[in-house]
Length: 215
Length: 215
DNA sequence: TTAAAATGTTAGATGAATCTAATAAAATAA
DNA sequence: TTATTTTATTAGATTCATCTAACATTTTAA
Ligand SMILES: [Mn+2]
Ligand SMILES: [Mn+2]
Ligand SMILES: [Mn+2]
Ligand SMILES: [Mn+2]
Image (cartoon, rainbow over all chains, first blue to last red; front, side):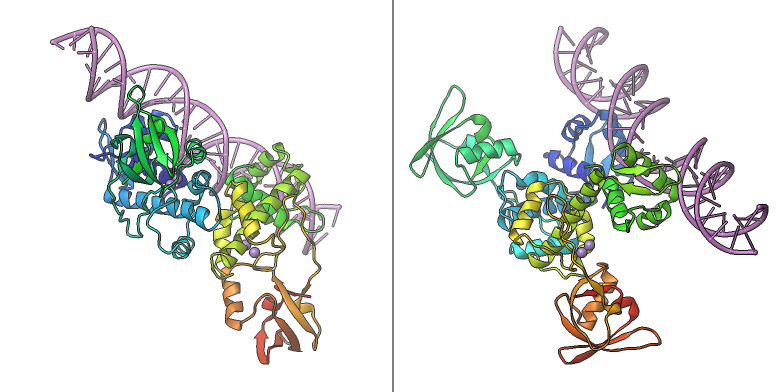
């Protein structure tokens, strides 16, 4: 484990990694809300610690060690979020900010007890999978609601954003993980969807449906 | 709220304050495990922030603002300890180190929910009182077991040390908060006590009985 | 295929929190 | 009361994480 700052860099690099695993300095700087030279010097430090591979003017990429570290932090974050919802009775829209702090708590006992109390859960309150202790992530295929054809009935299994404004909107629209919905109509002009949930019609903009995942 | 470092200074100054409220730089440096000049510069900074009053070569003393800040951190620490024991099922000997981290979590919701779930508790797992939201501390008179006369029957209400080695020893001796015990004999040579707890004799050194409080 | 734009790097500075070495003041002991 | 010891202060350096300004490289577009 490195410093809080290092942990946040590792986590951000992980979450920005796409197919190739390469992450640009510009994207990292935006995500972490720091300037480019800051990222540059931190990246060099993480390279010395063998958390990432780095060569000048190439992007940056996590090593196996770095990936494991990232998944360990993500595990703590997601366990904490679920614990805050299930045990402490907080809403799914208010747990992310607390989990951002709890994910840096250094105590295996604390997280092992959470895991036990939650009965070794597989997903967080936003439907995101919880990595196991070895850093294994149960990959589940999921489709964005924005890609689903009219007439289909699907179950909401995850949201890809866990920040308050988005989840506040879903609360107002009464959209939750586990809901079964039917796509009634897709508006060609703006891509918004009219969906049916237990008899009620709900209108969702494309910005929303792109961030809702179903199976 | 200041930085994590500032919070730890405030908390240490509070816990070192005796009658007068004055704390020496030397004591602070020892408690925080830093050198004297480090304390000196930090103290100046806290004085600017009106958390303490400071004049060169005088000790340092918390202002009302500083005292409130200290009690708010202590409240979080003790609520966390009790939560870890009562809700998460950890032992009283392993919660202090985790609470040292949790006390810096910035979230009123997190601590309000703890408080509710624990039913607005008055004391932590070590018998220490939990300050309320306004920073009021229910002062209870308590006597060190080392001061109690032979023959008396008393109830253990608190321990003044919550570090693992001490609590591990109490666990081995089967001494817990709430236990009723009778002082059988005080050994004049070393001040150790033979006590009786539900029929069993337990020998406790003076170093232990000084840190056990009864009523 | 060169000019412009985007992206990444280097140099040098800053603030926070720490240190060591030297010095000053206050408290204690001879 | 003076000398010694303890306690506190100052000066200057270090490490971490950050910044701005200037420069270099790579990518994209004219
Ligand atoms: Mn989250
Ligand atoms: Mn989440
Ligand atoms: Mn404690
Ligand atoms: Mn305690």
